[in-house]
Image: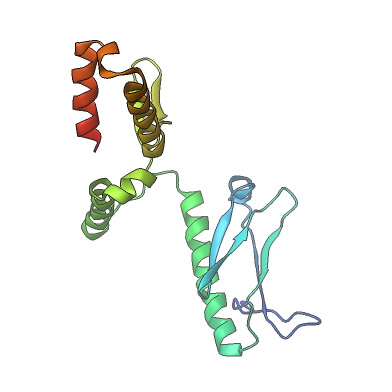
Length: 175
């Protein structure tokens, strides 16, 4: 029996090689509509299989045979990992090192004030569940700036003293 080794394919009209791999039948339904970011050199190739897609195909963007083989092997390994993940419905088991790295990444996002503005906040409402917090830090700062502008325009005497103390405390806490 002849086993076909995964290798770059030739393209008509181009010196660049081509990656082609059939989608396994057992994961074909699960991969339809999922955008795959396949590593290719220093960048990625984005492929979204449709109902009629039988194989994943894209240019390796190189004419160098050794570089084409390397890129082909990396793409094939990535897709094999995707197929394996789609076959198993069980949660992924992390090693201690992977869990520590993930925890460190989460901590850096939480602790870094610049990243905190770009992170997504979640709010839990009893009976409803978790939902993203739509107020970003920029929106909150704009709301406080509007409140301060109104406060200065109307005058400090027009605002009740209990509100004044809350505004002062909230303003100093947000700065």
